[in-house]
Image (cartoon, rainbow over all chains, first blue to last red; front, side):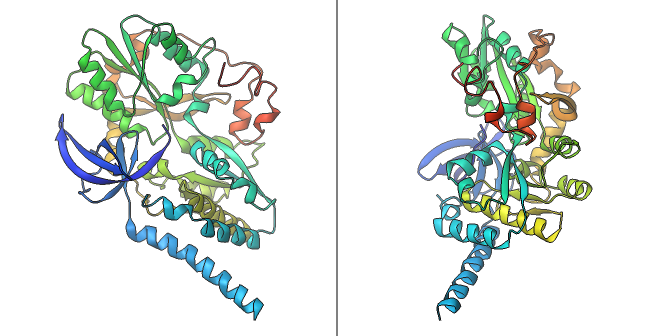
Length: 85
Length: 339
């Protein structure tokens, strides 16, 4: 129940008055409800929990988080280089 | 998979561990609220890589752990009735009630079904008009949008043989309960990223300020968890106490407002009992007056089932970070998942 994982929207359609979507989870296709993601479009990645998209994945923010961690790695490499020289 | 693999990179994990080790100077007790985060820490062996100054305590953010025994007994009482199809998320089926679990109800011929989404439970009701379909609507703020939508959909489609046994709890009241306890040990929190994906984290800055604790909204992958821990340790070492967001790719300050609107229309704030802790005021949701006709507790008259927790049970102290599971005399003996 507690697992939420990101998946890519491959198709959007209506069913029973609800906005639904087909999601690709790394090769596994599943139908989910997109009712809470009115702005989502095909190709977007959303976080899926118990069959519902709850949040849109933000690529810029994802890159920013990774960059900040890379900066830590870069800083460590600098220190290591300084110490070995 | 995108947004997962890059957050499991061993090199990033190693540098975050080194960074945490390089800045920590004192002992800190940090609670990860969500059981999913606890699982990820242990599953990836991250807890064993941390410096000895950091003590992780596992918080109450697990619906399996906090749902009181009597709610499970009520579920079992409903599921055992003839002409009932009882539906639930899979994880609840093995949780022991006072004498049995939902799996054993199924073994004795009860119609107990696992659903992935609560909408499936509504479909089951539509496909079986001569039966009563009941959904066990448990969970924190993460399941609330889905659980609420199943009720809304049943109302919109006039599905009268559908009802929900609600056991919906919320994180911020539990944080207040932990932090206001005289015996509290928690000095910083990793807040549950997926709860915040739904609710945002505007409820957290006042908590951080009131109790002087850092609160870091954190994701679930190894790099996220260690990054969240790094943020928390940085704050603790600097004497800061603010709410910040490590999980920016999935969480916005305001959360998912569309989901919050549906939650507010279907549910209202109620007192909820937590296993081993007791009643925490306004700590959960129940059906709002407009949706009372979908209340399984009333439909099946199980409101008067009250069950005493085992006197041996120290779940409340464990969930508040005061004790560890091996300190429980029933752990692995009377109390196992194989009961």
